[in-house]
Length: 116
Image (cartoon, rainbow, N blue to C red):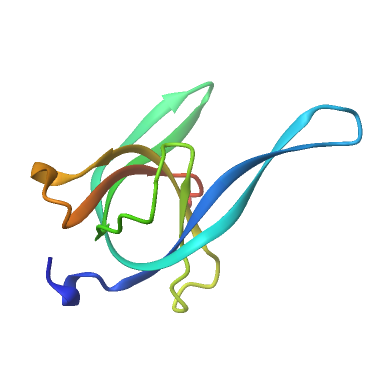
């Protein structure tokens, strides 16, 4: 993987469950790593759901393989690019190690905060 293509600085957020005062569980996301990645849109659609139009987009996020990072689909990616005023959060749907070569990871994600 060419270093020039990894042009976005992202944080990997790990989901942790915590108990609240009522005894229920709530999820919090804690940064576990900050890495360089590329983010490309794969698919976008505008659908009509419950009397409103909803924008849905799927993204492909590529990052360098790191054996110390144990990613799971419960993790999230935060685009912490300084050129954006608010962070963009992506929910991981699948994790692919192309050809099992341990060179890069391809994450298929959807955006949690797409602007309407």
